[in-house]
Length: 190
Image 1 (cartoon, helix red, strand yellow):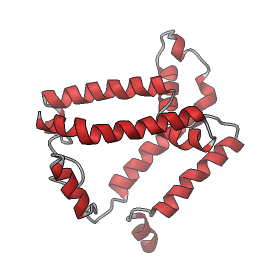
Image 2: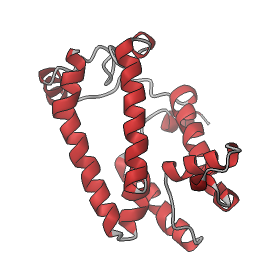
Image 3: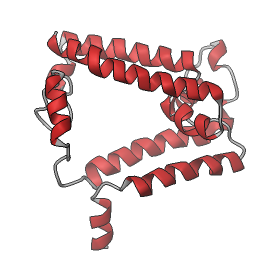
């Protein structure tokens, strides 16, 4: 039991975690499911919980209960990884990455996250609230406009050779690079 806990307390290497994620796709395709993604599950949750007759949410969400369980598994897995089986060591970041982040104006006071943004004090400030509300709106709009989220397009869409998913994933990466080098340093200076 002790050796199992010591294995679970360390991050899994990419060559284990990656293939496990990849094996989910053929499993879903064999089971007859064509959709995988968090935004799909959130739509299903809204359809189940919102009593209004909104045309976007008016469908038989019960056929997609497995997708709701997928999101529940993400939440449970995140809790287990963060609280039950935490990595005891500090987050390992290369010196080059730390230097690049400092050059961009991203101060790393604790781990990989700038405390000025990722803390209760930062969140409850005017800047934090604007970033959360604005960022939430942009993510929601982008997910709806792209017809799915990063996990749906990146895992399911690309593996089933869907052209729109290739365009969406390319756009996600381009947007991430743009925000990292231009938007985030500007936000941190506010």
